[in-house]
Image (cartoon, rainbow, N blue to C red; front, side, top):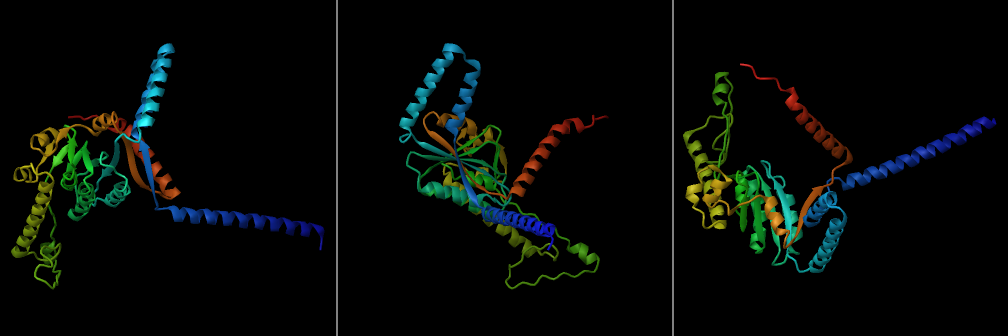
Length: 339
């Protein structure tokens, strides 16, 4: 066999070996990514340290010479004293809940609370920064039950509403020992609503029959395409009233000083109005409250985050960048209004 063929075969074997090794490595890496995708990671950060870092950075920029040296010395002493007192200082754990229609973060909120329940001391506190306009009754009932676990364990719970806590969002907020709201936060809407179109007459006009067969007198009261009856409609309204009564009772149990019949008519109020109606306890933003707590407590932000696949993270980041670009261009894209 000619020598160049032997050389070629040797080279080919080396290439195949290298390719096989690369494929094995990529396969293992992909398996690891798949196994980790969807897992949750607990992220904890000290808000005291974050604030102190920002303040030190500012001081480094405007102080000079002797004043800067004195400030560095004072800061060092404060850190040392704080470290010595760390075990005795109260702790405040900050959780964030931003709700959608199905309160999809309720499960993660519950797991965060489970992480804390075995560690919290009598002097500790949980603060929930809540933002939600409400959604499905069963979903927000579950989310409120997660916060109720803290009340049942006699853990101090503070809920801060900077923007909106309406309907199911207020159901959650009512569980707090202390409920704070920004002056123009949207609060309230203790009511229940249901909407359903009906196309029965359209189908009938085109000679289309649609039958609804049930076992049980009230298995189906209102339908999308069937013919609705006054009896079924009244039963549907009765169910809404029963749900509303459950909602009112739940809020009243948690906020006993509330005139529930005055505020449970489906209305919403801004923070100042809500304060006058005892729907909230104080007018204050979450930033202001946490800043005050940092003076005598260690404040930690705690959040469970799902570990996403690399492609999903890159796509999400690209979408955020695109959204920011559109927002920055939008004023220039608008045309002048002419009458």
